[in-house]
Amino acid sequence: MATKVPVFNSDCSSLLAKYLSQQVFSQLEDKVTTSGYTFKQAINSGLVNQDSGVGVYAGDAESYTMFAPLFDPIIADYHNFNPHDSHQSNLHFDELFGLNPDPTGKYILSTRIRVGRNIADMPLGPALSRQQRRTIELQLAKTLTGLSGELSGNYYSLGNIDAETRKQLIADHFLFKAGDRFLDAVGLNRDWPEGRGIFHNLEKTFLVWVNEEDQLRIISMQPGGDIKAVFSRLVKAVNEIEVSVPFLFDQRLGYLTSCPTNLGTALRASVHIRLPKLGDDLITFKAITDHHQLQIRGTSGEHSVSEGGVFDISNKRRLGVTEVECVQDLYDGVVELIEREQELAINVDLKK
Ligand code: ADP
Ligand code: DAR
Image (cartoon, rainbow, N blue to C red; front, top):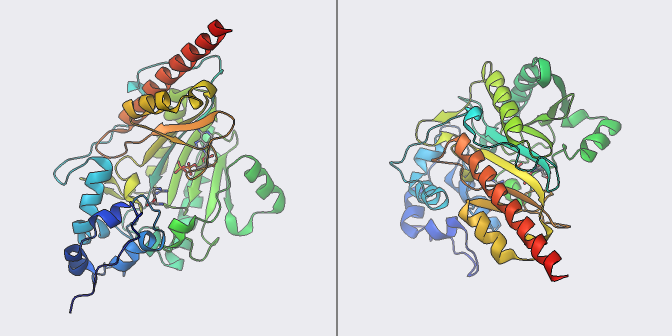
């Protein structure tokens, strides 16, 4: 007698709920990958958190083939990327078209571009053993503290950060906390904080989060809107790290990540930008961000709300597009958002 497929709340709109049919569930329910990651682990976050947008996580590269009857339709729906589509990487930041869209610094408070990376021939975070996670931390700490020039800096293992350093890292918004309930449900918070850490350079414009949601989150960031400078530093760091750390890459899906939403480039380019007039005209605001395939977030992380008319604007596309195209999406959208904000400000002045 086949086990009944899990039933979701009527208001659950996750892609897991949308694509987990009885047939798919019966086909996959007993599957286990070579690293011991089960199909039930892969779907647990979306079962426990019925407000998930997606609801699944991969535990290794094999998850993307063994669980393909569920993962492929989810990937196609989220990324508009079908099983026969291909992904190309392009990190030639000099192909980005455009200068700083806000040279006076009136709108853009800061720019941040991050990529997720995982290590070749290792499981992804959800299926890592305690020992594997510690081995990864040691390997990455050695690589990162060996970087030179602008990228040189210090590594801080979360397990033994002194109070003063912790306070400074929190003040800098650098210190990541234990993952949210979505990550917790797939085991990404196991043994916390062991094996996790943060590297940053002396200028605090380059960070790497170790063993957060992915094994590496390589981050370039600085105040202002010089998007090309931030992109250039990110590419330099990715290329230098990759000399000694092989990244997990798939010809079809690009850089593999634990969450399918980050597949491909695994790149999110964001600005924290002051747009108070557009904040009062969300129809216009969303029409512009939708046109440029951009996402609006709060400024304190993925599930936060915007405050004081400042918004986190970032690219939505990650897979089936190149890194240059992702950053160009952000750049072009920011140019139009600033133009519209200026028009709205003039209209308000004219009415006075
Ligand atoms: P990600 O998956 O890119 O890490 P989050 O939205 O969780 O996404 O952001 C992680 C952290 O980075 C948060 O503390 C957020 O405030 C910060 N952050 C994101 N974008 C920017 C930016 N453009 N400038 C400054 N901080 C940023
Ligand atoms: N909470 C999960 C993940 C969505 C994307 N965000 C990530 N990967 N941090 C969801 O299914 O909503």
